[in-house]
Image (cartoon, rainbow, N blue to C red; front, side, top):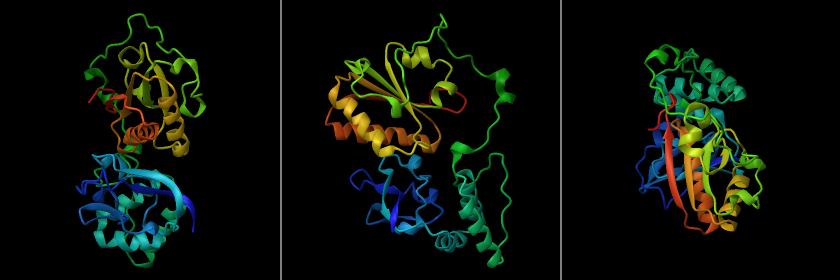
Length: 276
């Protein structure tokens, strides 16, 4: 065994709804005794397709000692579920650049005389995979797109630097008595009125809950900021794609670790730049 990323389920938060189960084509999740359970470490790839579907925020990714992921064991499960799940699993691997596992899966299918699905680059209606990486083209909708409210002055509302969580100092003076905005780093590019609607008069931190790897470091740093500064409120802004909901889970974990009771507000931004 060695350290790797793998999901962790908070049984106190989990209500056993089972929404996460279909989003794990690897078959690593099952609802047992009213709770979602990780039934086999070697089946979990640690990429977190299940995270965004959990309505209770009970699933997160952690780095710990775990059995190595086994693509062959996974394929034993996947092929039993049929062609659509096979295609979903392969696209899941492709979207996350897991070329070695994708090659193993293809070899498995060929060895068992199972047709290898052709994976298109365009968006599909697959039951799983990673919607956050699916290609979308909005140019055809430009003429009908609503005009968003933007700053009349056109001036930036940014009040500090740096803004990326990895670079922030928890002792920075701009955290004292601050109203804090924590945003997934795609949000300001997607929502045209970000500066005027969310950032004006506030302190900003950004990170990517999908691609950034220092999750434990992020949680500890946010906890230090919450604990050592009189933070008045926290506004969380993330995208609608499933993997982006991890931002909310990390912030809530940090808040719990800090022991503070701070007002939380959450906003979900669509891929077309609208508040949902």
